[in-house]
Length: 184
Image 1 (cartoon, helix red, strand yellow):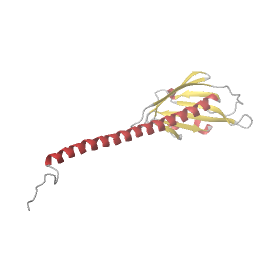
Image 2: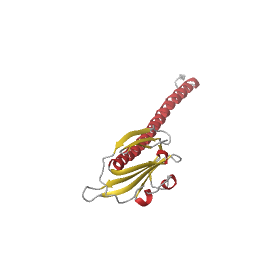
Image 3: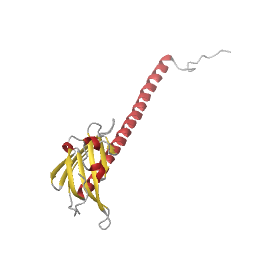
Image 4: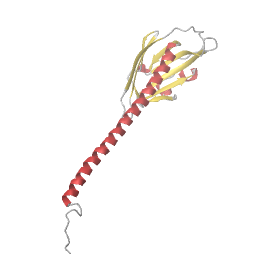
């Protein structure tokens, strides 16, 4: 009996090299797709977080200025203090609120109460509770006139996201003031 020799008993060296190169190319493409997806997700997450923080701050600032009986902008536009009506018309009352943009640490701080806001400076306002981080502003607050404040804040994410810019003007709705309480 004669044995028939067959050529299909395995892969040749050339075939193995071609398969390995193709596997390497496909594997690299898959890794790049996963990496780009991860980077995109980080970008969206940080942008959303940063934008949300700045929008919350803008909403609170809008309330504080809009319903204030008076406001004061000091420290080169980094400190805003208001005497704001809080609560319903029958049982509410005025409260002192303060906002400070710390350009050294890129943070936004908010203080409440006459004890915190009256006579506040950059040094004392840095100790107020942190409201948002990643906030940059050369001049955050500008008194346009005695009833209008311009607010310019930029939110900068840590690494991946895109910046968010808040640039708005808030007009005060004059509130009647009983004259008591000193906020600034």
